Image 1 (cartoon, rainbow over the protein chains, first blue to last red):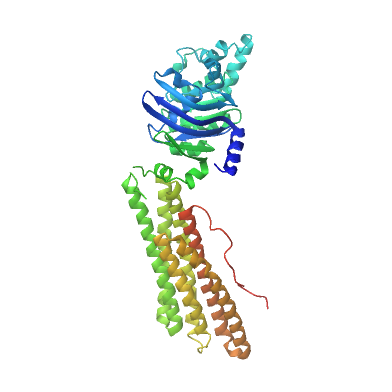
Image 2 (cartoon, each protein chain N blue to C red):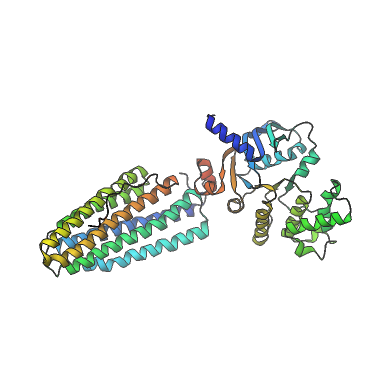
Length: 265
Length: 230
């Protein structure tokens, strides 16, 4: 590494909310993620793209240690959140996941009321001293998720009774209720229709002001629409990362070019 | 580069390149015919050039409609996007080239009503260089040969210098024999038209650079004196 790139990399690291160096993931014998160096900048949306099995979801799940739940999964290398080692033995995984929230592909509201779905996190983390404060957190989270107007008269109805797009925004409200710093989204719109997708994308853009967002998506157009930075993964390696505009107009690596223009293999 | 997984996309991009190649050939032919009409005082040919401009305009419309369709239906990115945007730009450059050729033809129709003047030869000489540049740049475009395009791009200075010289020559000629003023004024506009064709050719070279490399050409194009206020 030349002095110049070292300095640039240092500057990147200072800007970075999440910083990873030489991150490897093994599922048993399988080397699923290989030597990934990636910095996720604060208050930006970073999109992870790549074909199925390229490691993008695996990388995403490293950030809040969701991979710990998988048997035989081993993570090596260094991954830090605001400079704190995420894989340090002293880290309380529950606390970590309060700082790094997650939204999944299929909306997965709890079989509880709309209100309780959002109140769940603040309750278990003891974030509200009384009912009034809890109400406040729930309402403001629903508001920020752009859902309040649609559900304010039926907060006691089950969350599972909402439409798919509303359920997904409910899950986002649930994620932001515990005031995380980073929100991980694993294909949050793949089960939604275009209008619900547009609402979620608009929401992602608004949330960026207060949160750092990492989104895995199979829709290149979505990556282009919502993200500021795009990282392209292929066969477990990070091939290229750059400003989204550059990746989609002038990618530097032939693999990136091949993938985003639909010329793969 | 590999083919697209969706074959019809490749066919469409190839079709776009085809229309452009045809349009380039047509613009070149129009330009060549306009010069022949000027050199040979051939009014029939000049009239055909004027009438033929509509065909080039039609092709430009075709490129526009097709690029809009590709943008809407394929949502192209990266090199595909650059290729499509470049096609749109090049088609309007070529449309302008053909327009100038038609202009030259129109003026030669008028010149044919007047006694012949000597500086026609100098205008044709300027035009030959511009023809070479246009041909080389269109070849480079079809071959995606950036190196060649840049070499030709820097030749535009030659054209600018020659145009300046021609401008002076025409003025001298008119001062010596005021009866040639009408013809020489038309020639002056023709020379300007031809010089502009050279400029459009260099624009195509710049677009090719963007298409292939993804960035504008670095550095200022070497510029001769295009005009002097004397």
